[in-house]
Picture 1 (cartoon, rainbow over the protein chains, first blue to last red):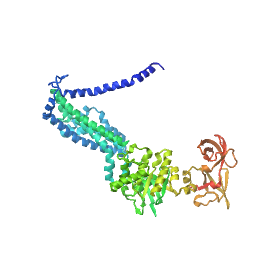
Picture 2: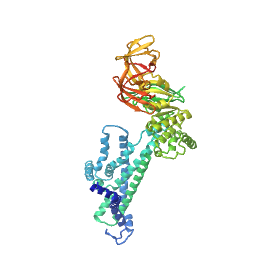
Picture 3: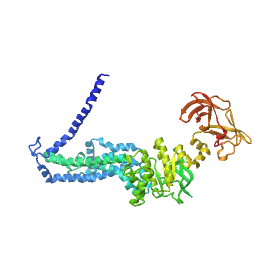
Picture 4: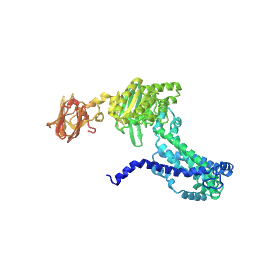
Length: 274
Length: 361
C-alpha cells in the first residue's frame, strides 16, 4: 500500500493541482507568446526585424495604410471569402438537412466522407486542384480560388452545422403547425431560429479559414490574384520590415473577432437547446 | 351530437395496415382514452386526427365539419406531444401564446390569457422563464397550457405522462382530470398503460393490431370484456382451453384434459351472448384477483407449485407453475402465507369465469 503506487498517489494529491496550473500557464504562453511578440514588434522603430527594438512607433501602421498593394490584398481576400462563405454555408446546410432529415443507405458513410478531407494533406489537394483546373483550361484566378476555398471550408462548416440538424426535434415543426402556423410561418418562427445559430457559427468558421487560406490559393491563383496571406508570404521572402507585423496584427484581429463571434453564437445555441 | 366522429378510418404504410377501419364517436366534454399495446395503431389514429398523417380511407368529422383533408394548422384540435415539443428558443409565456399569436389575438388579451393559463396549471409567475429551467413536471404543465389556451374542440394527448416517475404521474393524472372538468374541453388520450387509462378516462377505446376490440365505459370494459384480449389487457388473466362436454337446461360442464368443471349457466360470464354448443372449444378465463389458492392438492382442481411470491404491501401475488402453464394469483386477504415450492391447488367461482369462444372452432 505504501509502495510506489501509494507514494505517487500522495504526491499527486499534494502537488496535482499545482502541476496542472503550471502546465496550463506554459501551454497558454507557448500558444500566445509568439503572437504577442509579433503584435509588439509591429510597433518597432527599426527598419529591420530585431529584438529588442530600439524604440516604439506607430509609423509602420501609416506605411501600411498608404501601401496600396497591401490594402488591395486585404480587399481581394475579403471578396473571395465573402463569395465563398455563403456558398459553403448553403452547401453544408443542404447536406446537413439531407443527412439530418432522411434515412437512406450510406448515410453514415456520407457523414464520414464529408469531414474526412480534413485529414488529407493540404499540399496533396493543392496539387490535384492545380491539375484539375489546368485540365479544364481554366488557368488560375478568382473563380478557381473561390471553388478551392469552398472545398477547403466545407468540411469545417458541415462539422458545425450537421449537429444542429441532428439534434433538431422535428416534432417542434408539427407543434407549430398544430398551433395554427402554416408551413412558411413555421419555417421562419420555429425552424430558422433553431438552426440559424449553427449556420452562423459554421459560416464564421468558414470565413475565418477562407480568410487565412494559403496553400490551395498558392496553387490555383495563377499570377493575377494576390490574397493577403500570399502578399504576406511574398513580403517575408524579400523584405522583412515591421510592416509585415502590422499585416499580421490586422490578420489576427479579423480571425480572433470571427472565432469569438462563432464561439458566442454556438454557446447561445447550446443554452437554447438544453 | 358528437364532437368528433371517426368513420371507417384506415391507414396503410406500404403493405402494413396500421389502422384497419376504425369507428368511434366522442361526445363533447368527454375524457376518452385510446388504449392498446405498442404498434396497435393508436398514435397513428391520433396523428390522423391532428392532421400529421393522411388517412388511406375514411373520414374524420369535427363539430359537424369534415376535416379529413385539412392541414394541421386549419384544424381546431391541439396536441400535447409525447416529448412535449416545447419551443426551446421561446420563454414559457411565448410558448403558451404561440397559438394565440397565429390567430392574431391582440397583445393585451394574449398576455391576460397566458397569465390565466399559468394560474390554472399552477405555474403563476413563470411566464419569463426559459423552458430549460423547468423540471419535467413543470414542462408537462406548460405543454398542457399551450394546448388548452386556444380552447380547441379537442385536446389530443400522445402519452405525455409516460416519461414521468410513478408519483408525479399520478399527481398529473389528477391535474388533468381537474383541468378537464374546469375547462369542459374534450380530451382524447392515447396510452399503452391500462392503469392510466382506467384511472383518468370516462370511456376507453381498446385497440389491437389496428382494429378496435371494444369501446365502452371503464366499468363496462373491466367487468364485461367482450374478448379475451380486452380482458387480458385490462388486468391479467389466467386462461385454460377447454371443451364443452355436457349441456343441460341450467348447467354446463367443461372438460380440460382429465378435469371437469361444472357451473350453472346463469352465473357464467359469457360476453357477447354467444350460445354454447356441445363440443365447442372455449377458453375459460379468471382474473388473478378472483383465483383462490390453497395449500393442499385437491382432486379435480388444477394443481401446481408456488414458483414465486411477491409481497406488495396490501396484497400478495403468487406465481403458480402448473402443467397448464403459469398462473397468477393475487391474494388480498393475506390470511395464509404460502412458501415457495409448496404444492397448491386453485379454484374459482363460476360467477367470475369468463367464457370466450376459440376462433376457428
